Length: 425
Image 1 (cartoon, rainbow, N blue to C red):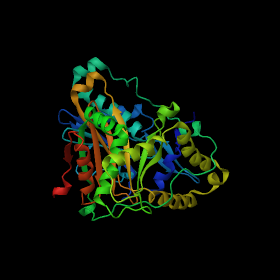
Image 2: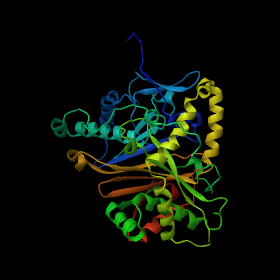
Image 3: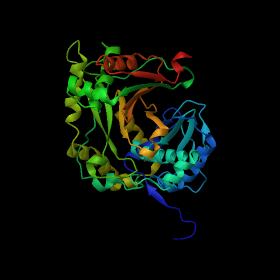
Image 4: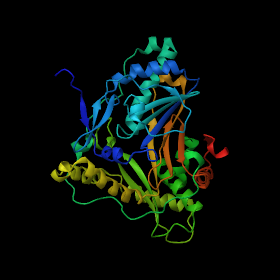
């Protein structure tokens, strides 16, 4: 290897869009946070990040733009500075203010926040990094724990940077994406570019009982249905056949294609509510969502969705077009696709922690930044028996959040609400 050589990698198929559309108002970042049982020591967290980052080649990267494509290159600068959180979350990550890195780590009281520019990885990759960062921090905070556990990575932490889209795609001839316009949630914005966060903590055991026994669906289907029901109850009369509610639901492809990659590896499917009558019950919407999502969750359909995208990327014409022209085309395609969804609800899944660290960890939560046409989004994560459904919103009105949680509570689920306080300022 020649002196001065730096490792580099191509962006995965999903990541190509993020550098093109990212900016101050559409940051394409997401947050995953862990809440500890004691206040965070900022200096020790910085030490933990300094030690953890070199072990993760997939995070030790900076973005470059070539003639035809953006790409990622090894970043040999020191780790980003860890600071106490003083601003709204999920702000645009300026590489030149962040040692050229595409993620940031902050803390507030007992909480450690990891925010990631989506070009690096999806939620599964983010969880792996945050978990190891937290382990390293706790070992430094509690030396006896460090003596017991050592300083190596957990056996279940993947460093795989395979492009699983390329390995698994098959030639496809038609688009699987919906392009018709959807109902869009509008309203007065929070002042000063505010970012509203509402967490709903719920016992997984009670959600299982409500979703399966009362409505015959999975927890994920149940929560998507509750979100749609919340939108429907808050905007009755504005949702029509021509402007239905359509929720984009990211699907982690790793279990379907035997992948451990830490690159992005997900596709979007949609849950659609098209009103055919004047009134719907929550149970009816649960059954509609169950039928809609269950029919899309199979390997053949998921493969066809991403194969269409990868096939376009692989064509000679697409590769030969200069980046400046690709950016224009990507923006046009993205805008059309964005307006076809009312919102997005992602489920990062269940976070597992080594038993030795469990006494120091209370909960996790996650949420998404806003995007074109979507000023309200939802995200789900669980740890032990605590599932947290989080709404992130740029809108002042919280009727949808209230209606969603009310529907869940009406099924006997104990819902504990927590917010970041912007609605009371």
